[in-house]
Image (cartoon, rainbow, N blue to C red):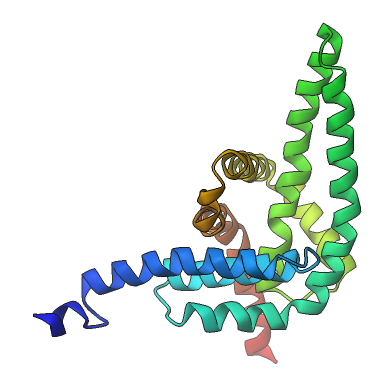
Length: 210
């Protein structure tokens, strides 16, 4: 009986393994994000490991996570350094507009700004998943993700909304940070993997021709 439960191919074992990965990957991501400048490579690693282990049934989530983290460390760091001042500016503007929300005009402007934020939030959702799948330098990564964000605007807005919702949930219930990062990566993977598919196929075809 015990051998059946702990058999790696047993359904119960696989479900338990995925639940453990769900928490483990979130904890790895939180830990690796502590220096702040490592948010980029940490997010690339989280996305890659979540898709491979939770959607494609690969194993050794921790090994996949840290392998992807190391592989994307340089470009991920540089990209994060570019994004941090932009993020600080957007948050600063939000604070200014919040102070004017007491008037009718100020409130309308504040609400409009919240909707505008979905665009940069949505674009940021492409950056590090793309980095986990393709090879780019920082400039090329930013440029190509901006093009993807515009070309797939409904998906961009949806991912931005999901990211904003996850941030809001964690700000009110911090314990959710133990699972939400991985859940968010999985949620983003549904539109992103569809968007990536033709580019991955083209990349594989080019390698076969070489």
